[in-house]
Amino acid sequence: MSEIAYLADGIGELGGVELFGAVFFTFACVFFLVLAVLDVTRRRKEIRRRAILDQNLTRDGNAFDEQWLNKTRSLRFQSLSATSSMLGDVERQTKEKETESSKIRRELLKAGFFGPNSVLWYQSVRVFLLVACGLAAYLGVQRFAPGMSFSTTLMLIAAGAGAGFLLPNRYVARRQKQIVWQCRDGFPDFIDLLVICSDGGLSPRAAIDRISREIAQAYPYLGANLYITNLEIRAGNSLHEALYNLGRRTQVEEASTLATLLQQTEVLGTSITDALRIYSDEMRDRRLMRAEEKAHSLPVKLVVPLGLYIFPVILVVILLPVVIRMKHALM
Image (cartoon, rainbow, N blue to C red):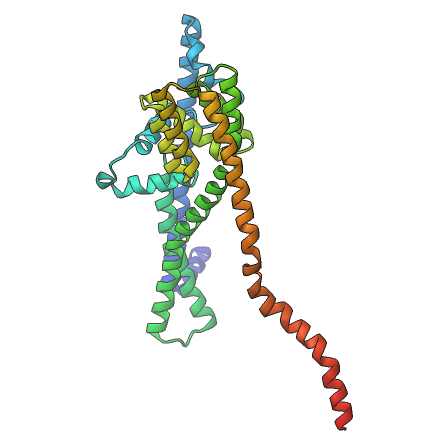
């Protein structure tokens, strides 16, 4: 009974905000634990279903079309239900009819989050950071500035909660920028591999399927987007439409230009290999031009650090002996 009374006294001494914070963090931990368990259970169920499907296809002798599920170099985005929902978000063209969840899903796809529950996790993290940062701001005010006015405290809590709510958006935007640079750096290599596959006799569709597996080792996000492009082609989209969607996802202008090039090649009946080789040379020239442009803009960017950090030091080094001599001369 003494231990129960001690715990009751301890709980009575806690403030309302501290008690709410403890209850909230407990609920958040339980909520994320349940989400993780459900995600693991769903993935295990999907793996078991694919294993049964592979066994049945192997017994029937028709497992040739499903060999990409068992290859060691295949990407990890192989769940049939996940790819179906992912394609439903990727190939939707009418943005006016999109819901807020579809827009968030599209932005998460651009940031490299291909999971089927990515929107749920994203919204959960936003709500968690909203409450957690607001609570942390309140506890910080009570700890370091207990005499602050109520309006100022409320403004600080609102600022902390807003910062926590907007923090995932900034992370997603930064991740999108990194993926864009990665895809832009790897796209010339993709064109070179496409030329090699075309020289070997593969069609552009089969070449994209092959390259998506090989290039994922050096450029994983570009390989994942090429895999999605291959899924779109399998779903019935034409090659140039899938490449246009690739350009919209990766924000690489060369992908849209490649789609136009392949479409004109099919219409005019010219050699795809020669067109791809010329386009590869043009892409190399564009990369060189971008490097030269950055090199020419470097002196302008160096003006600010030179004026703020280097010029004052040089000025002090030059004028300090003069000042010392004048001081001794006047004394």
